[in-house]
Amino acid sequence: MCKKGLIGDKYNVLSQEEIEKIHKSSLWVLEEVGVRADDDHFLTLFEQAGANVNESERVVKLPPNMVEEFVAMAPEEILLAGRDPENDLLLGGRRVYLGTGGAAIHILDLETGRLRDPVLQDQYHLAWLTENLENVHFFQCPIVCTDMPKEVVSINSFYAALAGTRKNVQESATTPQEAKDIIEMAAMIAGDEEALRERPFISFVTSWMISPLKLDIGTSRVLETVASHGIPVALSSAPVTGSTAPATLAGLLTLVHAEELFGIVLAQIIREGAPVLYGPVPAVADMRNMAYLGGAVETGMMNAAAVQMANYINVPIYSDAGQTDSKLPDIQAGYEKAANIFQVALAGGNYIHHAAGMLESMLTVSYEQFVIDNDINGMVLRALRGIEVNDDTLALDVIKAVGPGGNYLTQRHTLKYARSDEFYIPTGADRNSRIAWEEEGGKDARERAREIARGILNQERPQLIPAKIDSRIRHRFDIRLP
Image 1 (tube, helix red, strand yellow):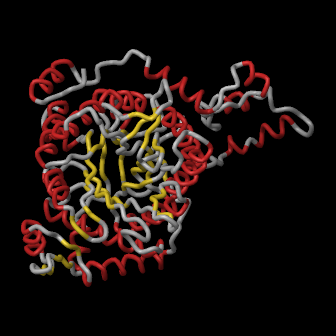
Image 2 (cartoon, helix red, strand yellow):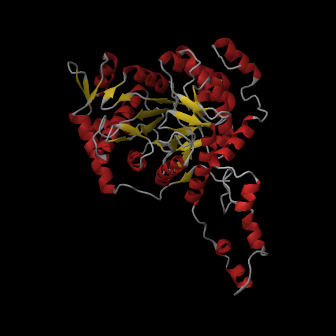
Image 3 (cartoon, one colour):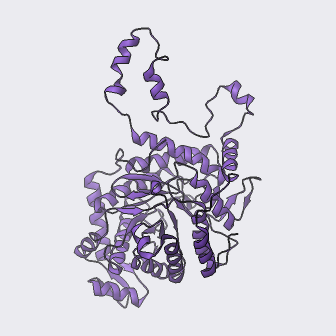
């Protein structure tokens, strides 16, 4: 079994000098260019906190000393709890966790293989699948439930996820009231809101910034609500090279770092010590047609570099890796996902979302891909764990006992390590001979993954929300999951 929370400090894209140069450049952007905020409430918040506000242009500019002061208020570590403590995630430093991402508008049907609209029942099934995949550590709701009215979609997504997994659940909310309702529902499960704050088994993601450098007012109000309640929130900002960011990787990193610093300052103005995740989601555009490229190797490079920027300011990071531009669980999906997950994990990304199930640059999810990505993640985690070197693993006594020309197969030492986690065994990979593979039907990776997914989904499922609490939740809110 591969452990979670392993340290990823094996890959540094940027030198220390380059990190400092990007940070100083981002401070210059905030002081000289600023962020547009078309809302009197937020302009007043920033002005009262010491920002330079141009009311006629609706632009907020932050002095460097103000940025440093407020960023220092943000926690260096954040607990994203599971309802089972074994699923706790302690974000910070370079501890690595891998999980799902969202929000896809299509799903590949498990039985037909055809593209269709995702529904609430899929959210529940995907949560249960995640519950049973050891190398998928958290559940960010991966789909948009198209059968739900807009006014109840967020709370139903959270509910379906909590009904399906005890791992930490993350989702967005479209209005402040939705965020309040979701927090109230989670507090009912936790016991009360203080218990939820102590062990937050839900968290939020807010796409509060419209790149370049413009506050999304509606989502910023959701951020304000979540931060004021002290619930962990990821500050997602997603500029794309050449369209909503400069065409260079360094230029994009400068822009997104400035946006993230601005978001951290905002959250700390709202509530000092608010638990926030530095949340850059940098991406590449195909410069031939400006199409979004989730699987580009440069996307992985920028996300790995962003880990270093987050570490520089001592704030946990919401990382992105595991996207692909492929439309199917195929060879392209495999190499694009593996290349980028490896980069960001080796860099030490804390909360690496999109690392399970995603296809078509976030537009589609696949049950089979969840299973395949679980194996990719397992291999990544095994690589992170490294090679243990001690007296027993050096095996000098065994080498002496076997001697020249001998055989290690019958040694107790061999049996001991054959049964250990020295070697990672992927769940869905074929490692048989060709003859054995043909005798078992000659199945490809997708077919094997489909069988594993079916087996998990056909299991009897426990009621993860206690019956009395579930009844109270259904009485209080418009819950649509049967």
